[in-house]
Image 1 (spheres, rainbow, N blue to C red):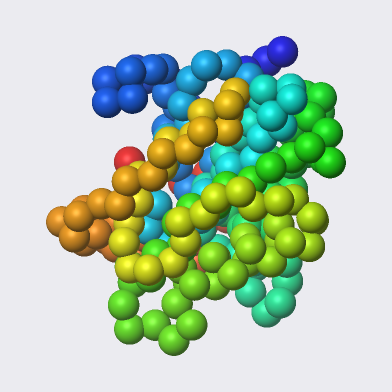
Image 2 (cartoon, rainbow, N blue to C red; image 1 turned 180 degrees about the vertical axis):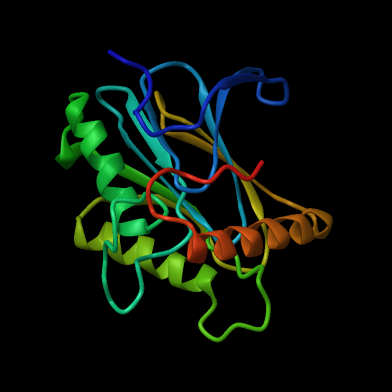
Length: 199
């Protein structure tokens, strides 16, 4: 079985804190694997949905920044930067690898309101989206750390479904706010094809 989905972070690294091989996901990335490694991402207002099939030992993570394309359009284009499409890509890749929809289990993280001064902040919208999506698809949500104002670092182990979350200090929050603002500006100017690397 191929270890990774086609639209995934570009490479692996050894995560000394976790003591394992890892793959870092950026906004609009997703990865699926059955290997003993960690999928790692850094979240501000973005959300990472982690899905896995415990019987098959395969799982994956996505990282999306916006729930939809605006104006009520669930999938504005084929980009995984939108939650609706990112979820479909992740689920479809898991199913292609033999996972059963009826066995899928979920964990969800992020959606912090790190960008201040917004009515209906994007973090809250992302968190609502992933909860509503999983409920509509009848995928059980076993764990979550959504909302609040904190950025987070998440590590997900796709073979076992284990997830680790660390809330980051305020010093990292300013860095994430700058990254997310720059990313949102790029979204308004950049065609939907391809992902934008920020780190």
